[in-house]
Amino acid sequence: MIVYLPAVLFAGGLLLVYGSAGRSRQAGTIAMAVAAVSALALLLAPMSTVFGIGPVAAILLLPRPAKRVPSSFEGLTRRGVTIAATLLVALFLASRLPIGENPVLLSAVPWFLGAVGVAWFVSPVDQLERLQGQVLMIAGVAGVILSAVPAGVLTAGVAGAMALMPIAGERVRVPGRVRPAFSGLLLGLAAVAVVLAATSTSVGRANLFDLSVNLTGPGLLAVAVVVLAGAVMSPIGSEWVALLGVLSIAAAAPSLRWPALAALIAAATVLARTGERPAWIAVGVVSVTPVLAALAAPGWSPRVQAVALAVGLVVLLFAAGAEWLRVLALPTTVFLVLLAVGSLSANQLVRFQWIAAVGAVLIVSWGLLGVVVQPYGRREAIRDRLIMGLLLLAIGARDSLGLGDLAVVLLLVDLALVRFDDGTTPPTRWTGRMLNLARSSWPPSVTFAGATLAVIADLQASLVLGLLAALIWAGLQLAPLVDRHALVPAPVRPRSRFRWIGPAVSIACGLAPAIILRMLRLSG
View (cartoon, helix red, strand yellow):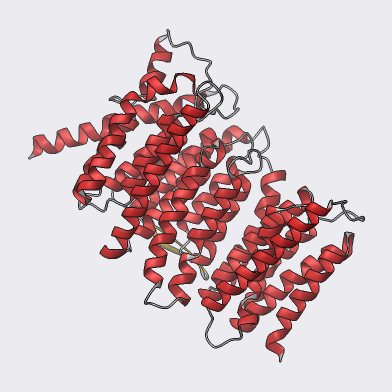
């Protein structure tokens, strides 16, 4: 009978939340978090209760108003339907992914916690409930993955601490006096990662008790791109958010990797909420892959994992038009998917490639539709959509030389670092002409190198993928004619020496592949 106590406690907390306000409602929210922790203690071990420190602390930092917030009949109906639908979906998923021979109601409690977070995030009654929804979503992701893939005490505690990141993203800023030094430290970290990746050196696995990080060559390049984007292009004072991306890439435990990604999404959408809902959908879809690998039947789990990775990435690319999502969340998610694609079998890879091809067509078509609907209004550049299409195709190209992986890195550098402009440099000066060259699709730019390598890699993978990539590459040459009235989003940052890092990296990345291929040709 004790196995049903977490579900009873969760139900009581949920009724208290919807029937009261102020401290009583806060107590009900804490009861739901404690119920999820209790379920994990019964499913795994009592030491896993350390996971609940982060969610409970986050709930305590978000006090509720003493009086109930007024709501209309339409709002009440929408909220009721939303919470009922999310709980039913959570119960269905828990029944399809059982944990051993435990009762479904016991293993469903962590799913219920995430479902309540989704309902509060989708239909919040105020800003505090929206933040609480993000806290519960991150806690739900960590709890569900912990129940499927158990981890040690320290790993569980850090995974639970990710629930504090929505609050930190809204309130924590790097002080102005230490901001240049902090950005310089991030740039130094990016340089070290690039040197280690170029010398074929991997950090390997480093352990702190049960907390383990693992960085190989592709992981080091991923860290370099994310850290560089965080130092140069992230919102003022929020450069520290890039460290969440580093943690997500470096963490060896899935129970820490995906909650860190969810925390990154929450922190990245604090200042710019455009595209946040599709971004959360993408995180939910891709983060279910370790649960499927551990709990689903081997007959259908691999197929669903490949589909989840591809669909989640396509959805995130649709959401990545917002500058902060593109700067921080997009590189982190793409690299995580790229590392996961490397373990797919041949049949699973073909399924991923087909979905990626369809997604590339949809992304480019959506950009062209924006040109027709808003020919002179504020819209996203079609060039960015074309690059995203090439990025999707390059991820699925598993060629023997690794050109697809290199193309992914170069295209991410273009999207996250090079494509932003403040419009203050006159194009008539030599500096303005250099900026235009760095942001063009002609040599020596990172776009040209990345697009060319993507086409070559896709031709080795499949003739259909290669032809589609070639068509998109040809469209890049005509994109400036269509994008004459498009407004490229520009992060609001003061003028500094960092603003030249993106164009300099673009030209360096554009020249490096040509120089390396020339050296290989001469040596051969």
